[in-house]
Length: 136
Image (cartoon, rainbow, N blue to C red; front, side):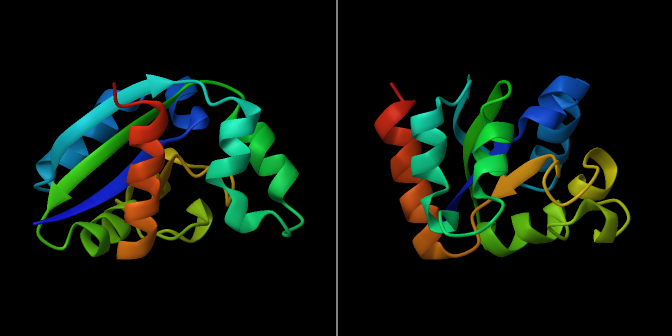
């Protein structure tokens, strides 16, 4: 079994589609091992997205991710990372395959409804972030 991290972003929370998204995740065979709703502080969003610090969109990303609550989850399943990436769809919601979470609930490259770990190393780092601040 493999673990991965996912976060339903503020745009999807505002749209009221948390339940629909969690249903789709569970229907795809993922087990939710931990879950928490919270609003990221600026400092925690900066830490979480530090990999993008030098990118021109970093400030906007941090602002967006602190604009409202998110739902953070640790998921488990065989091939969890790859399977979640398929379920989520392309980063840009406008380019995501029909039926993917981003195509159904996102609007563009930033407001794309959901974040998911992209590698085992990233999943380990993001799960540790979750456990450090939110899994208590």
